[in-house]
Amino acid sequence: MTITVASAALDTTWVEFGTVSFTVGTLATMSACIDEVASKLKRDVLLTGTTTPTAQSVTNWIVRGKEELVEIKNFTFKRRYVTTDTAAAQFRYSMPNDYNGGDISLRDLTNNRYLREWPRGRYDLKYPDPSEETNDEPQIFCIKDRELWLLPPPAGVYALELEYGRSGDDATQDVLWLPEIERFRCCDFATAEAFRSLHDYEKAAVYNDRWEKGLGKAVRADGKRKWKSRGYQAISVFQEHSAYRNQP
Image 1 (cartoon, rainbow, N blue to C red):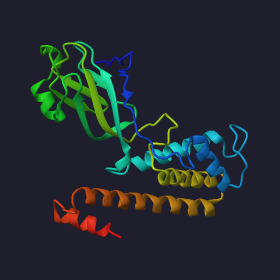
Image 2 (cartoon, helix red, strand yellow):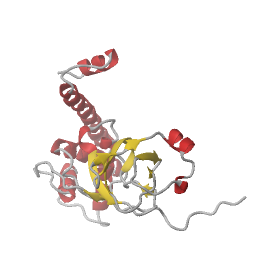
Image 3 (spheres, rainbow, N blue to C red):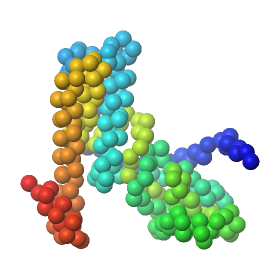
Image 4 (cartoon, helix red, strand yellow):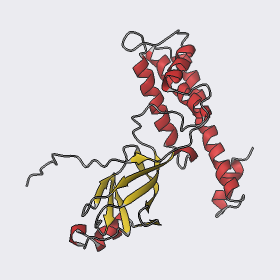
């Protein structure tokens, strides 16, 4: 038996909804973040390919810092809203590139209603071949790894709105969806990596410690926001204990 690898990737275009950015502040762009790292290294500027570390390396580390940050479970500011249009009879759609699991919701904007999410096992058991179903308005959906499966297959064009938590690849250099304090923390992570590249492990350890403490503060601040939004009520003794520990 042989397996034939697909010649074309499943590639759905998602368009981000209008967003409200945080105040521009000090670190408004990736360039400003790079300059922040350069100042910690006592450099006037970092150049692409001619300095150690390079500006591109620092960019990569800041992007990784963003990814590390939003990997924290239920981080408040990682929610994203995107839209796409269905095509008739097409029931498989790729998820956005920066989706890496987590809670989602899917709304049919054409009919102004939410679709029900089914677990993969139930979906596969009841509808092993969705293409055999009659095309109609989608009613349910299922997430299979990085794919969105609809049922029934769309009968035409329907506008869908996907709400999800970004936690994977972030190819853009946008930092304004993060509070500025988190941008500074991403710079701390990049600074630690920069000192490692210079074999200055003592300073790298200092900034890595700042970064890890910053992550801890982000978790506690996030817990306080959720604790307040629930009216300071816990749904279990474990949640109550966790929230109590996060109080000042």
